[in-house]
Image (cartoon, rainbow, N blue to C red):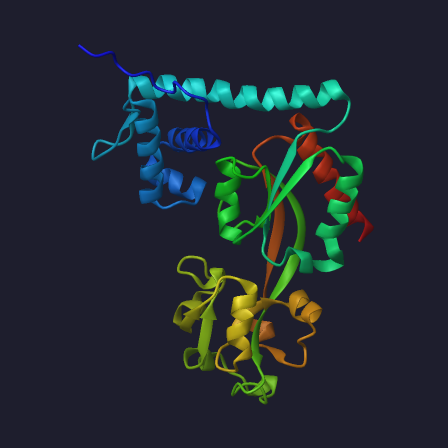
Length: 310
């Protein structure tokens, strides 16, 4: 009779920690479907992650089906051990920082696209301050779609994210930063370009092509009538959306400050500003409480200083 193989006989890898964080989120959400919102991942992706973890550990962690979600005995032990492990990793990092009397470690920062175009060069100024105060910290920056940042913070891929909150994120620590104004634009050559504001009617949006953005996705519309708009193309990144708008064949949303920073005021015109403009509110989000993590605490202090300077 052969010997049963030992699970986790090798070293823990970053992927193992990521899988454990996803498993923790599923347990705390009470199931795969509930965890979709927390992780902002499709049910099939979550299932694949848990299946990978079960294969890695060589044990069944949970039962899922018509009877609902339930941890197995092995699953409960792995969940309890995961809590201890993840807390110990965080505590170790903080203790090392404290013992050196300086900020050490790594800042993995995820930013929504076009952050360098933010008003007052907020990110450049904040990073300048942080580099001066925490020169020993290694900084890793990822530019991500705004809806990818919350799951990246939740499962530990990044330490701190700066994004618009498209969904509930009460499980994360949040710091409000600033707002940006979103306006609906057309370009030279579009039929609406030469029309005065009092010649525009909301019915026109049923006929002219609109490039879909995250706020036009089903369930995310700011205004109910957006559901009836002629959404003919999709582009969730600002530059890609601007490219379609500039063809003169599409209407689409862009941040007003970004159009101004690009110097495109003579090529793009806001339309329906009174009816369909809206604001995005940006937040810094992290899993850890700032007072428990010197790296996060230092960077948030730099952000705050930059905001106050204006």
